[in-house]
Length: 291
Image 1 (cartoon, helix red, strand yellow):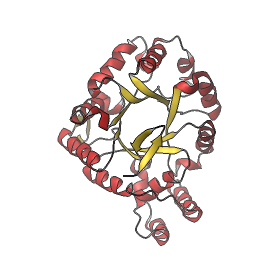
Image 2: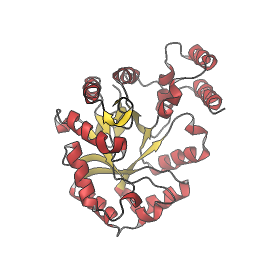
Image 3: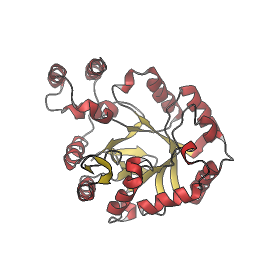
């Protein structure tokens, strides 16, 4: 497993996401615990040491199953990431109780990485109000070490992100954002990446396969790509795209099967960024997928 760079930490370049865990009879609230346990064991065996979850994933069950499965390993052997839920949806609730509940579910006394609620034009006033109880609680958790590194997810205009970072300063240390070769067609996404690189803020890419959309392309497009890299799989091209973007420190993939864990970790045994000709060819595939 190749490693990503975040300050002085050695994190796996591929991270295990828990948004799309396997379920029983396609019921989002009935997780297949046995399979998930095997997936996490396989992830550890192949070098993954970063695990990402959130309050909303599988209606809170993702935090609990991850905590149960990962607690078998020494805490210093892995990095655990979580996120505070949407503030308006939990207005009036005790933020300390929510945070303590997340730690209890994950069976941990601290989070290595923790994200603020998604930054949008609508949430901007909440996240800029340093007197809000949720914001005070998060800032206090950073100070006392229950949050080791704080980040954010921008679903907004670049100007909004710039104002946000001006207020929060160095307290915010990383950006976790949706990023793939289809999203790259969006000028706002490209502006985000350029701005974050200038600010020196590492990017943790999520949705690298577009929720599964980028695992299947037309036969013609696949043949064109194979002319350039005969032994590369279709999903591997999506990951190689992200390996080609300066500033991307980590790629988080929502794992849904043992087969996916095995295939993805094999891809990340190497880091082989795309050359300009390959980069252009993949963007053309993206245009075809978008119609």
